Image (tube, rainbow, N blue to C red; front, side):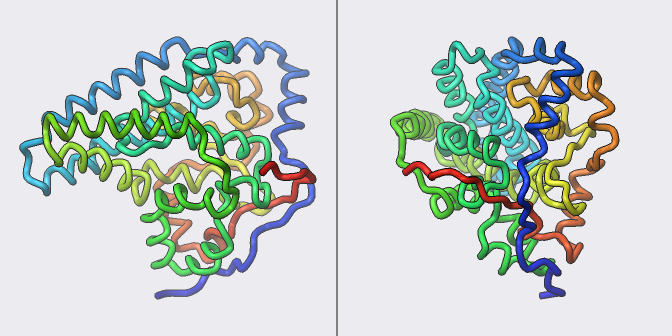
Length: 322
């Protein structure tokens, strides 16, 4: 199975996350950054175009041989679906229609969810708030792998398997780490999703459904775009818990690579994050950054010092809500 990873525990720290203090410092020096906050008027049109493209693709694949259904799911449809999950990430911060229209953002996220094939958007919103508020929080931030994941997926072969199964762990980990009651919004998300799935099945059969769901699972697993899952917060350098990537894949991922900037200013749409870096360049240029998500995946698999344990964790002094 190969050599085991050299890490056998998370990196525990006892200070607050760096984004809070950096945000205050940057805003004090560059108050004009506040003007970037708010909604992105183009986002709804871009997302709508992607959803309609996938619906057209459902029609186009319904008569293809199965091997081509899976090929196009991985090479094309899954890329769009992964990008839509990142649009949902942006929408979860109310940047599609603004904070004053929060419910419209939730409904639009369900619309963006449709090509993914499985209900996702409402649950993501519920947990993503904690990821920002309690970054690295033990039992709070469900982006952190479990002890079992860190212990077992410690060799190159097992880490490849873990990458392949990432969608499964992202779906099930919250139920283990920080279970929360199912909300009415999540139930509505599921009903809307499965009704649309049934309509697609009724019109064009099983192949379009497999095309959508397989694309989502495959491209959120072992795929170049999925390098962002590892690049964002895995500790490639000791003491650094958030990293940015400024390469070309940002063009198809709503600038999720600008991740330090995003955590510093989560209410700024992804389309405007490059302006944050441009305005406050001295705060970001000297920080560690990634140049390739493919290289991130390679290093994650073959570097013994990096694995599911390579995350910074901290305790937050609060009473967890039941």
